[in-house]
Image (cartoon, rainbow, N blue to C red; front, side, top):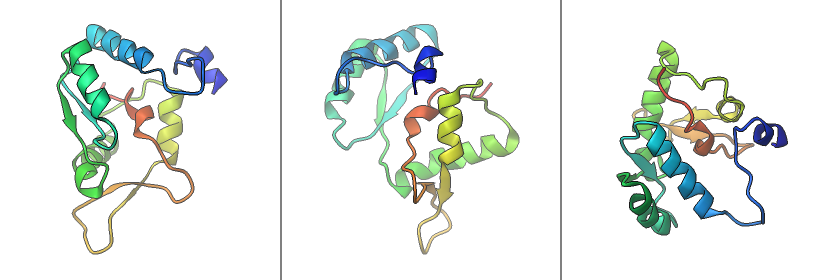
Length: 134
């Protein structure tokens, strides 16, 4: 992780808790640099963040349930982009680490839903945010 921080791929803040002000400042800087249209958030315990981000960035947020139903559309798009080589993580080692551990699955009894799964490592979509179409 220290190599990621030294390379500027992650931001390390002091202390043992999440520094939300640093996160909000990074999101605001990204919105000023890139054409960010909207963002999704996890509804579970996300209400304070959902209220703060639009005030600081004017960014529209949409709830994305962390369930097969909520993640199917995004995972389907990601699979299509992967097959067509229509995206790039721009040599981001954090995104590479997350993708290397990400597995797709369908819940029992359905072939129309999918979501991330890994029985040994709980992957985080957070590291996948730097991935975008080229």
